[in-house]
Image (cartoon, rainbow, N blue to C red; front, side):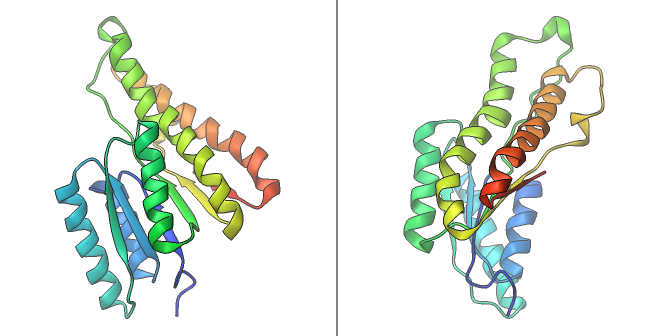
Length: 188
């Protein structure tokens, strides 16, 4: 038995990369997992990989997929509702979704590109966390937010991305001060 057996973990941005790896890791440790992203075909593949990893580790887990654009309030609500309908609880929220917009120096940065970067990487994470806190309070849950080394390193040609990562880091520090005393454990 693992410390995650019977727990529910929701991982956004889990159709590839780091999010996929996180989802597989939690499944391997016995957690039921809700994988979320924009590409339903890839999410189905990730779900199957999670089930296989769990089975290989001696666990029988349930994995669901929720596809859609998490920058919209409707999809954030749908993601939480479907997760709660299936699992009845939320123990860990991994806010991993984001965007690494095409490189742009200051002269070629557009308001649309900047807004897309911040809407995807910062705003939608904050409002997903805001909605999830109600359910995480019931399980003394945990919030994990992925970030990047570029939150503290300056670089040319990636101003919106670097700024969004710094905003994510600062958001988590603020959330830790606000939510930590209530039992939630926000972390980067």
